[in-house]
Image (cartoon, rainbow, N blue to C red; front, side):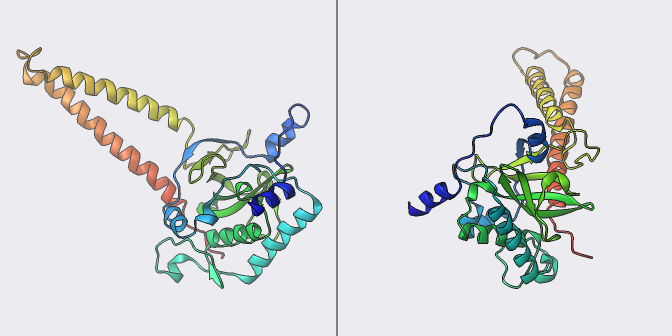
Length: 273
């Protein structure tokens, strides 16, 4: 209880003001819409370290002061300097393994250690969100710190802590602030030409249309195969419907596999050249 009171006193609950300044805030703040797949290594890590996966809390935005800005930069620079980047392929033989690093680690390990150190300094877990991005065609993980000045990015590639819209990354997903354990899809910046290939525009709408078509085909197949109503119907009439249903189910399998692979392909860190 004492920790909770300390957190609430140091970082009061942020209530965003409406009206003036919302246009600039919309650039500095991420917009999330819809769920995203959690990284495969996320849940095993959370089973071992639930504290570092937690995003519960009332404080959604930290009121950023010069002192807190300096604290973020100090933690970011210290972790980047102390930890040597080494891919999971080299350290554990290929499997993606999330952990708290001591001497070396992958990009997500840097982000996890930074979150751990900020939590130890009293920062609220609800404002510290692990985030997956695309960097140079490969996956990369950073830590997003939600503040009233914007969403700040702590990255093992840079000692500077920058607003997310001023980085060169393509943002994919981050931890949800409202649902612990969930991940949310990040909308691209308005007017940005950098399309997120892993979540093409209209994918969710096409998925809904796909489900509607599949439902109609299943219903038609049930009618076509009913022995009571259509006992006199020839097999040649039912065959096209069965083929359509089989094709639909195959498309569903391909759709799910390809969608899952999009996430896996962006779940690896890109090694520093």
